Length: 304
Image (spheres, one colour):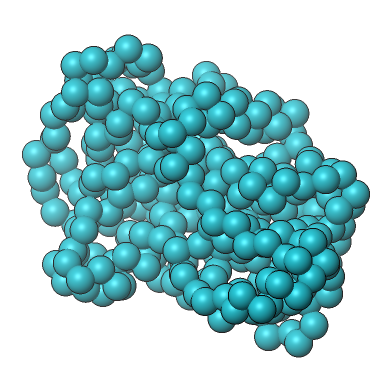
């Protein structure tokens, strides 16, 4: 089979031949039909001290199962987060991280909706939104952010503000349902009741400043950053961290309920995943460059 690897920090990425892996206990072997490329993986390639497997979101058909697998069988269509080599024709998926794909949904829809949607829905839930509140979503044109903009509305937000790096993305974010769009270099981000932040770093400061008294910021970025405690004390604001893997492993019932909610919203056309571009597996470097330059509006997907 083919898989994408890199030999040193920062790349470059290259395609190589590798044996098809065999599933171990509680693992599924999936023939990949779509693979989601994400900013966290791009950052790991750029910063990891040693080369790591390129994992991430995959969707496809189960072709073999390991011992102890009870929820899936050969021929099932699944999507989920792969922690090993996911940029490949075949990948191993832990059963606990796998979700079924409805018969009438495609693999590209699944990989664009489920994992990114779970992160968006989980971060939104962590913010404890109340009907009538105003929401801020940073990286609003990203794979997760463009779903978070739509989901905030389904949870009762009467005003949704999208924050983007490039004003050229404003029309895209407004078309998703955002009432206002701001760029990161603006001095005043307005006032909101809660913020979902996917960027981190120096943008944490203006994001927290935008919160009204009692406001909540949910950080789900791998970008890190530092927050001054005084900035939270003034106005009794809260900073909440969210990680999807913690829910998937520790609360599978909630994970499954969120997954069902996403597919229901998709079927009702209340949530529409947008794919920026589909890249061939051998063009993974170009896909990463698109994400790194923040040129994408929607999800970036690899198709083997």
